[in-house]
Image (tube, rainbow over all chains, first blue to last red; front, top):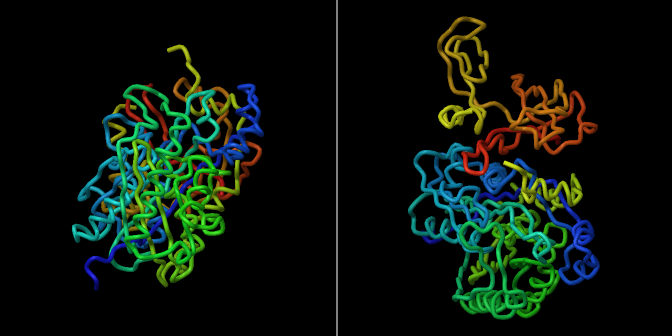
Length: 352
Length: 129
């Protein structure tokens, strides 16, 4: 066995059933829905139910990952959750997920935060611990109930969902061949302590932030691997709106066909830390043995994590053991009006 | 519900942990000290199945204070795959879509929270499949 071999042994995604359409939000703010739909390449977004948060969605995503991994949860050595919306400011999300899947007490838990990159950060550290031989299995999760201020452009895209990946050395579904991380101090989007909603630099979130880091990381990992975009069957990028990942793909030399399967944002919205990880689950649902997958996340502040995965012969055996991501995205949707949406998202101030 | 009580109930609320009588196979959820069927005091740990069917349900239009923001919400008696019956909310469902005999699965959800500063309590709710 190659001691440095590591990869995904189980994966799962969870998307809530509730949705709100761009038209419904635009109507309230007197905005032109078509301009937003065209400008953002987003038609609707997922909304967490009033009884859902990053922890509850991460538990469900991890249960699906366990169904595919078919491992004993007691052998899991770490659970890391990346999110901008950990339900507690002080109290770990990871311990609750670990308890729910019966992975306690011999486990290491930590909650990560790096804007929308927190999920890939959790994946990166989980996989590194496996490569280092520190533990048999480690779980990296990216999930969010994304915050966007009422009336802000973000409100049209901020969505909810979670993706969970179990990393290990044996019985791999997809081997991780290369990683690369690329980051600088770029204040394009932030949320200060005690603030409900993030602030952002508008157009500043584009060129010097998303594109600089996504393209920078993408180029470096291609260089490191000696591969070309045409070598890959699939690619997935952070997707704060529909246009950014399409443009990033084109700038790096990937076609729309390569990103289409993991490009969920038109119907899902921006799930922040869950965005590129959930896109990766949609790709794993359909990928075939031997396929190469290219992934680059992005988180404001700013940075990108890049991964190159190669699908093994085992993936097709487990793809149907849990609900597919696109099935959850495209079925059983419940549409909300804006009033119910604001109530579910806790945006209505009530008397104490 | 006190924090201590919530913490004590984590195994059954998070993981559906029950006790199975080692003598007659009766499943006690929550755990019991004495089997009501055969009087045995020997139980082994058992995890309930997380899928089942709706035996009965009602829709709460006027809820207690802690649940008043959720009305109308659905509460059902669910018979799980192992024939154990539990009471649970049926989430994400319009009452007109709920049918007796309808299939459900249990999902991990927030059950209660003590205001904006208190502890968040998690557990199971049923969702239609």
